[in-house]
Length: 309
Image (cartoon, rainbow, N blue to C red; front, side, top):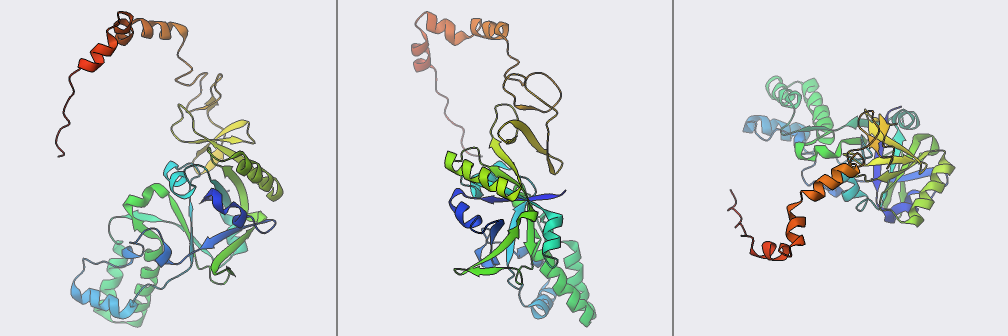
């Protein structure tokens, strides 16, 4: 099962689950995107004026299409920070095959991240300018539309974005907002943020049960390099290779996931002998024993920061 994930802030919980056995997702137009350079990769601005004039004449401008965005991963920390109000919100995982069956005209594609327009688009513009044939003009329009909506500058690659376009016939107008309602069949998992309130956590757990979706709580560990997930508040899970799976192993003391089979995580593997040795050789402890630590810190020469290079 291929999953894609939508990040939500805590404040929209009631709006997302306002309809029984459905999830409501707000859809938006390019003018409302958080990236002001959306659609820029739908044209090669470095081409000559003749090709640019052909592009302008044939394409005019990229149409504004309703769009909603997902991510390929539920454990992207910047996404939790930016779109789920600093881990207080939640994430919903959707089954892509169910989405496509429910909305057959919906175009769901991974974003391509790059620093300049694709060679396919550049070549299409050249063909349209040189051959001046209707089929070349139509091909240019189609490629521009696709590249504009499914390409972003490389600096956004951390989002691991998946975009859904062609929503017009499926959305409903709700108080001036365009909302796509997805039924329980499309909903595979709900993940509660690590900093969510107890009220939010309980509400999400209840909704997950009603939708027959897996329920997870995001956890920030001390040794695992990304957030991990607690299934039903008990079993640790990790996200790898596009799926939520059991870890290679878990620490016998703190129960955090391990990246390889073993008994203990790096922190729990520190034993009393290690601690005693480290404490015995800590120069700060020696200075403090003789009452010299505060004076040492006070008199330690401050290094002036180097000028910015």
